[in-house]
Amino acid sequence: MSHLISNLGSTFLNHVLRDRDCKRAIVHDMDSFPKKHMKTKPKYSVRNGLAGASALLRTALSSPSIQAANYAIVDLGTLGGTTSFARDVNNNRQVTGNAQTPVGEPSPRLNVFSYSGSGPMTNIGTLAGSNNFSRGFAINDSGVIVGESDNSSSRAFVFREGVMTGLTRLAGDNDRGVAHDINNAGTIVGISSNGTVSRPTLWTDTGTGYAPSDLGTIAGTSTSTGRAWAINVDGAATGLSTNASGTSQATLWSGGTITNLTSLGDGTRFSLGYGLNASNIVVGSSLTGQSVGGLIGTSSTTSITRAFVSGTVGLSELIPVNLYSASNNGPTTNYHSIANDINDTGLIVGNSQRISGSAAVATIWIDGVPTDLNTLIPGGSGWNLLSAEGINDAGDIVGFGSFQGANRAFLLTAVPEPSSALLAVLSASLLLRRKR
Image (cartoon, rainbow, N blue to C red):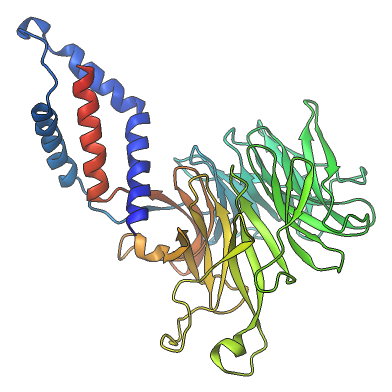
């Protein structure tokens, strides 16, 4: 937990230092002080610095936000219906996902939305000719959104400058496919068909459109399949592709090289990469070779799925929150876990599950240790956070949970603890006095 406090403190300090409005207010107050009443320029001293810090700290600790839980929670709302799901958040706290339109319409639908930090979410709609479904999977720091339109026959799209455009598939004849992620250079990854099979696809911004290219697979054959789920700032991507034996496994595409990340257990199991950061550290999920029955001593043959994080030597397992054991075998213990995203500071988010494939507990892993995100939000909020889907480099988290009887999209923003506030206030005070 000390790592969490440290990370939240760093996040708070970064917000303090980059808050231009706060800086302008400080400058204004200093400039407005009558200089004729200042006999000499005050000297910086540790006594002065600590005295100022003490006063600032008393003010800070009296603020409700400093004594709040580790995260403040924002209900992102809906598009007029009852449900919504958040999938990604950029470094400007802009969010995308999809949400239900008004129930009173002839066909209530789930449409991709954008949320910009204030006011209600905006309905982005669908591609012309699609059915009533669309979903945003990712949003970059320029606010460009990618995803899919039409869940009967998925069509990849990019939404920028107010226009939704279909992305041509590898076969070149239509926009069938799914776009899963986009980096700040505007490069998109996902899946599309080459006319025969579905392949991991990269779309490059040419200035006049997006050109698709095939990322290749572990097996290296034209008939093998794959899907790219995430791309980082340098253009490295992760997802899954089939190996020579036909098993789909987590894959890293980087610098023209295709790397099989194998799997947990004996390395031969199904696995997939969902996210990666600037250091090419990949997170995702993998079968372990174990069964639920083998774990709890029953006849269940359900395979155990566990989250993983890649390292210098293979994959490391990320256990779920409230992991089942012989001494911890209550009805809310969990068997499975999935990691959905990782930021550049190494914070990993996802969910823990008792029933495979059914998100149950939104989870954050810090140095490999899982924590239930529900324990880090204000008590009595009415929320039950089910899955954390995305995290930005400031530590803001999006996902979905149960709220007021329905699935709703949420945004978690980091709130400093008193110890973190002390560090931030002391640092701010010392910096201000040095500048005088």
